[in-house]
Structures are given as structure tokens and as C-alpha cells.
Image (cartoon, rainbow, N blue to C red; front, side):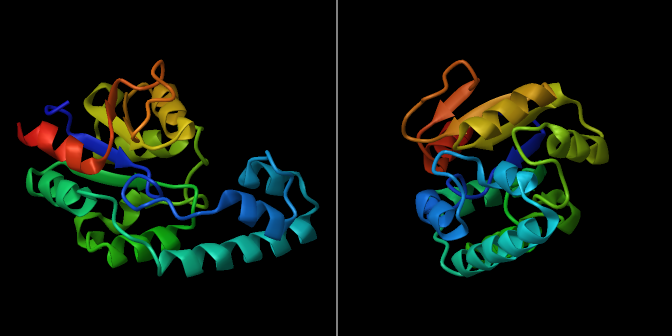
Length: 194
């Protein structure tokens, strides 16, 4: 893992503490309880989709101002940046929300603007398009990259792109999808420095 040059991170729940109350967001938007919010919006009529998208965007913008860095996240990003690794963000949020969140936790300067991909810049995870776009821009192969995240979609996107995967979560609920499992960013940083 220490030799990998391209590091692609999920944001919410990975670099920031998970704060999205998805059941409450679903209720507010009128999305069925177990539905994927973004997938559900795609099934709506255009006017309804636009209205719901604006509501979701407003919720995410508000949450971005309240983010808290995950333990060790800022230090991990600064370490990888100082080592010269390529760093990207692939999130199902808006790009501006991701930028705002990265600024709040103090690491926005470690990412090139074009390497922060939101749902409007790339195919939403679990699709691999965002990962492949970043690797093409960076001129790296999937075998030299890792997708890091806290949820199954992050790992599935990494697998579909052909790169390594790392689950950042106290529990390893998807061992078949994760090449590595770390309980948090602090543990990963210790591993890399060890």
C-alpha cells in the first residue's frame, strides 16, 4: 500500500465524520425509506427531479459548514501530499460542497481543483467513471491506485475500476470488497508511517 501513487478518497464518513442522517433526508425529500437518493431522483419527472435536487443541494450545503474532520484525516492527507502522491476526491455530493468541507477541515490546498469530483462531474459511485477519469488525467494505472471509503459503493467503484480498495470504518462489513481495512484515518497514517 505504501508504494501506491494515486489515492482517491470518499469524503463523508471517510475524511469527515459521518453526519448525514439519510433516513431524515429521505423523509424530507419524500424518497422511499430504503431507496438510494440519487437513483430515486433519476426516476422522477424532470420538474420534480429539479425541485428535489435543489432541496438536496441546500441540505448538503448546510451540512458542509458543520463538518468535523475524522480522526487523523487532515494529518493523513497532509502526509500523502507531502510525499508527492496524487490525491483525489470522489463523492456523491456536489463538488462545491466537497470543496467547502475540505476547506473547513483544513486540507483543500492539498487537492487540485479538477481532482475534486462531485456527482455532477463524474458518474456517481458505485460506477467507476470518476476513478477512471482521475487516473487518466494523472496518467496512472488502476494497479497503482487505491479507492478509500467508508461504504460499499466506494469499494464497488474501486473494484469496477480495477484499483485497490481500502475500507475506512470501525467494522469490516464488506471483506470481499476491501483489500485493506483500517478503523480510521489515524490508523492508516500510523500504518503508512510504520
